[in-house]
Amino acid sequence: MSVIKRYAMARYAAGATAARVGDEMSGPALMLAGYALTGSASEASALLAGITVAAAAGGPVLGAVLDRQRRPGRLLAAALGLYATGLAVILAALGRLPFPVTVLIAVLTGLLGPALSGGWTGQLPRVVAGDRLPRANALDAMTFGVASLSGPVLAGGLAEALGASTAVVVSAALIGAAAPAAWTLPARSTRVREGRPGALIGDLAAGTRVIVKKPRLARATLASVVCCAAQGMLTACLPLLGERALGGAGRGALLLSCAAVSALVANALLARFPQRVAPDSIIWAGALIQAGAFALAATGRPAALVPALLLAGIGEGPQLTALFAVRHREAPDRLRGQIFTTGASLKITAFAAGAALAGPLATWSLPGTLATAAGVAGCAAPAFFAVPLHTGQACEDSVRRPG
Image (cartoon, rainbow, N blue to C red):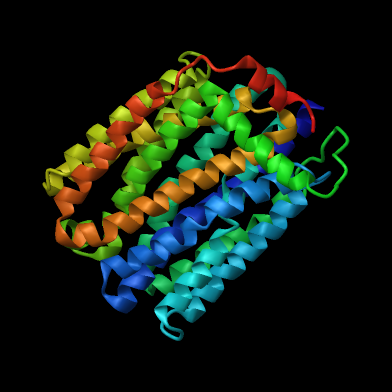
């Protein structure tokens, strides 16, 4: 049985890595394609924001439907295939359709974005359970680090060598290639709820109540969302950073690899000692580290960029692992998929808002935009502690009861 479990985890990790590498490629690749076509940082950031902003609506619904599936992996596989198709349609529309129409296509594609992140992670307890879950959780978070490292490198390298269109095609291919692994994810061991009128809406409300009423989950969610807004601001600055400091807009995407390297190393240490530090503490500390990193980048010195991004990864990587640990700990099993995809959708939407704000702002002042990102990330720590730990236990108990 242990051999079967190890094989299932390896298959899970392979599929998650492929999907997430493609996802990490798609944002920079689309932004570079938009920048190459229009020459405008604000329109390029609008394309990135378009594919991410719809996640606020898509994530909760996708998660609620996943929680009602006997074989949720098959729905994930379909979502991956549709997302990959959407990327191809966006690429075909660039330069052929009016730019607002292309952004609209990106918005529709983005509805399925949470499938690439929370949709996968919500299935992890059915792949690895018991005392092996903390280590598997850290390894799962490391797939984000691998994706953050290789995705921007592939996007930037392919954009420089073969054009941004090729980078978009490769990202779509990787996401589509993950569908078979998603299809074979384990089925639920318990009976799924029968569908009935209004039940899906009730599940959506129940999942939201869990996030709001469980204070430790609410703290982690709020802090991670604020940090994601700051990360979106940084990402929108990458073409200008690459152009002004590194000699090419495409090279700006490579800076994300610096953050990914340090995030991967930090998460590898967490995987080795998964229970050494409380995940709740890692979340607010990671926010402060990221704030310091963005402030360092705002100095405007090219020599400070690599150390700044390395420092950002040290804060971001463990924070993501800790966030997953809090979600697994706090989420009821019957609402786990929805809580993960809802949390992912909130983060993606915050990232989109940050990117949309930073695009025009970076054209005016690049250091000012990075300083603003540092301030936003710094707000995540007080936001974490602003959520009180005492809430009505009766409210939490009402959430646990099946409805």
